[in-house]
Image (cartoon, rainbow, N blue to C red; front, top):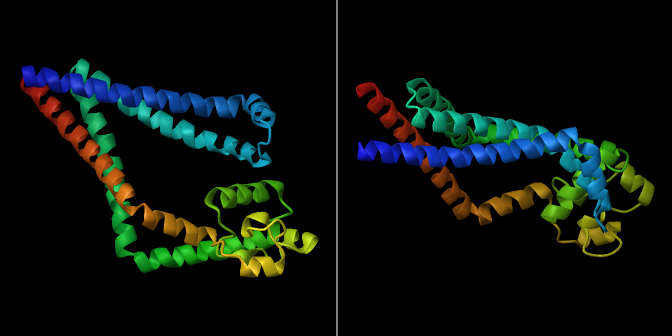
Length: 242
């Protein structure tokens, strides 16, 4: 009984943290969507803040989804353990198992079908370049998203600066976006001599540079998921045998 009680308490604490974190994420997501006017006013009130910060409003739906899933899992884990509900524990186990299988399946698809993934990435790159040539400098939202991405990653275009050639911005200003150069004026010559990499190569480099950290985080999350599933099944079986 001592081990059983310990597992119940640990299950409650672990899922309680998940529930609270999910509630906080869900609350932020709802606030972003419902009170977008106040958030925009706050962002615009920050001295020197870029206009592109308004794009943060689009993250609201993702926050609501993630927060909702975490709250459901936390609720099932907490109540299932403390109320000794086999139904809740089983449902918690099933949801966590589905997430775990989806993660494993995604990793297998990336490893086994690597040529297919590379083909999809190339197609995505072609569409991204076409969109840049069509809308960058003409569509304010599209331009803002790219400016934020390039500034944050310190990159230029999807592949390189040539992605912006013949775009509305290039045609109207006869120069390239400022992030593409390390100079004040990004002329064609300056962009050609610039060492700023494309955003996709830059993203690949970041992943490779932090591969050990990302692998450790992935293994840690996997370990927590497996531990939670094992504990939930132990409690499920113990409750049945009581």
